[in-house]
Length: 169
Picture 1 (cartoon, rainbow, N blue to C red):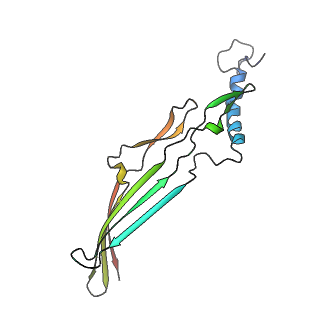
Picture 2: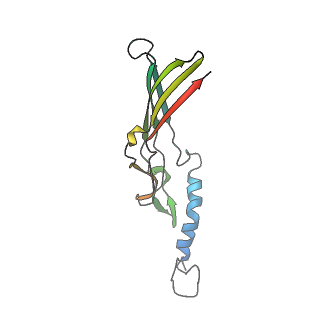
Picture 3: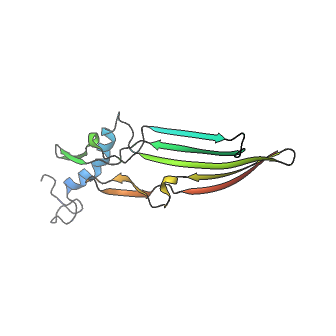
């Protein structure tokens, strides 16, 4: 009957998923896993780079002040697949995966260091993480539906500001 029977009640008229639809929905995960063999893992970024720098003034008006920064770049990743029909089966098109955008985060640090008492090194530092998301409203798609629309979104990591004091004896 070429898959047109109701999966849950084969003797009645079709009211839910027919057997063909049920088979395809159960097999899609299998076809994704089989098609990904030998491919990079989905939702995993292939490349990532970190750059960190710091500078401390050793003399002059800004003596003992320091500033620095960091940049973190993350590559795009596969986050969903369009569907194609192949021999009566609905399969994911692994070669034409939907990709997320690459992502860059920027951090800044400002600090001051001074000897206090005879043997205590005091350091105060302000760290600002994810300065690119200052208003905490950036959204990013982390998963796509087979039609290319967003299936799952999340807020990007928020801007955070930390003040730390360190005492070394």
